Image 1 (cartoon, one colour):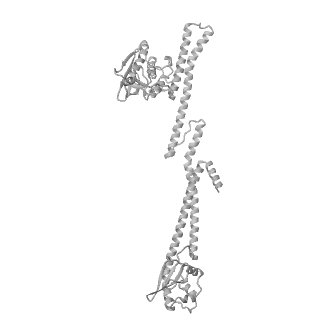
Image 2 (cartoon, rainbow, N blue to C red; image 1 turned 90 degrees about the vertical axis):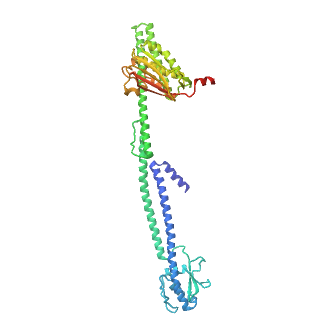
Image 3 (cartoon, rainbow, N blue to C red; image 1 turned 180 degrees about the horizontal axis):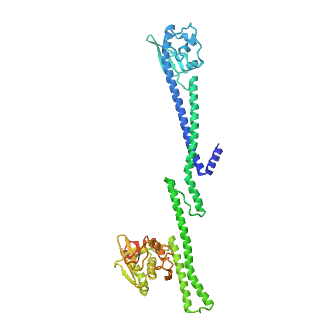
Length: 486
């Protein structure tokens, strides 16, 4: 038996989800139906025996009168010992209330069931409680009624409590009820099987759809989706699966675009270098300082591209090394402006700086923040025309330090502003490849600012051009306190 049960459990574990749900719900239903059937049967048998006992108590009370009349006629209970059939006649069910028989009159033969029932349920005791006739297996707690003749108790009539039905009619009724109970139980079990099968399939259907879509997704088809027709937890699972598939599809598109963009960016300097070298090899262009400078410029461009890609990959995975310390962001910003001021002037740009005299304290990596500021100023050098204005401002409130880089150039269309922080993104014409750069500066800035728990965004500047706005958490410490601790 234990081996069979173990084998069944093993097969259930190997079954499909529908099979497992069906088995689980069916077991519960069968147990409930079995418990209800058993409870109903026990309740019926107990109630039926109680009903029979109440009926026999009525017979007990109705038989006291005939026994009293018989005792008055004979003066004692000895007549029952001389004529046992008289006892059965008096105690017969539905006997007349009067006492019509005498010890000398012939008695009709009684049904066997009546004789057996009477003999096994009633006991006659004399006035002193001694056994006279009937069932000797009585108890002191058995229901009893006194037999009174002329105001004197001459005996007691007792009924032995029911332990089971004994009458043929009662047994037939009990058998019929038991058979009906079995029929109802079997019918309920069959209905439970059908209902459980339907419910198991209905519950497993959306999960099967999700499983099928998962296999499709794992096979490389990232367009796999499931219809969101369910509600509750399964509906949320369907929504989450679709969101996951959409994210994977978007990531795959970005990966493909990244590979294509990197290939495109590498192709241009490599093509220039290849053309220069080929021209020198065939003698079209002599080996000169100018040729070497041209090749060196392309090598530097490739080196910057590789460095930017490396920094971007580290920023994406959070692997850029940071040395966070308490610093005055105004000093960091001034340092970046000093390095770029001459180049901005040579490009014909007017630099305006509006920084507060008091320190703006943040906690960050000075070298990385300078990289952010330098990248933004380099974008202005590349994409803002001569004669325009570049304005740098900084301010703070109770929690945040704000740094804005504004220009008065051509600006960027409103719809394209969110795309400026995507890899290799450049706006055509004013953001052309001819000016240099691979469109990686702002994505790197976004990663560095995010590592400082800050935000960076692009917007239209009040000067008419582009605004790059940076927000960094304001530090609660002061540079003076830090220096005192040192």
